[in-house]
Image: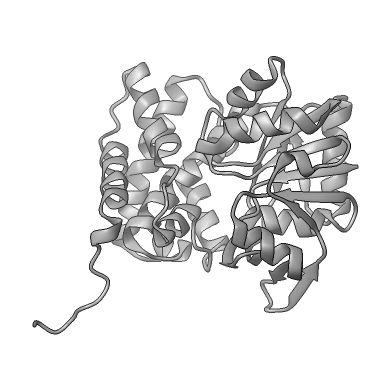
Length: 314
């Protein structure tokens, strides 16, 4: 199977290295430093146990460089780049190929299908976690299931599931796409904004009562919105699920924290901001998520003015 992965960040590199064991993989990224590093050194993966492996993976920065057609496109870009990734995927995907999104937030599948003009996107989530150490160098920071939306009998989705499993990625199928997406959304609602604002690893949120209290309020609001929308979450106790993820990925730097540390645009609008927007549609109050959204936007607006150390008065 020929695979093109859009976004060679922490997760794109991690999955790219793993999938290269069993498939022909091409990474696509527009960051020149990342492309140069992977071209020269391959993808470098530091494992949870500290071992370092390298995988020789082809990398391109222009979709025109992709030779032939891809059977599978996997999107790991930030949500604001989903449309661009889908447009690029459309030029290289085979007529019966699929696009799997393993991104954060809501609305990614809809953007992909809009570009293709037909159902092409497959919703997916992963509890695997990774941090960027440097261009083309990722650290595996948490282990968990990967799920794809598709019922038994959907041949192409089953093929993707089998490919993932052959690569050592534990992967299951779910017939409830919205349940999958919202199940992960609530986890991100509880973790991402708080870690970005507080500058802490995931595990801290489950350990410190003051953090856990805010997290619980944000998750409770999101669960109420999901219930009002008639979405069935893939777990009974949302807060328990979020705390479990915090503990399982205790040493992980959440994606929004990584964005904040790099002073780049976050995905707040499709995570906590999406809860606020959907809450407004169904009449569910979401004051904590609204405040977290506005706080992260204020953080983005003041990146260059942050005080990160105490300096002697002049």
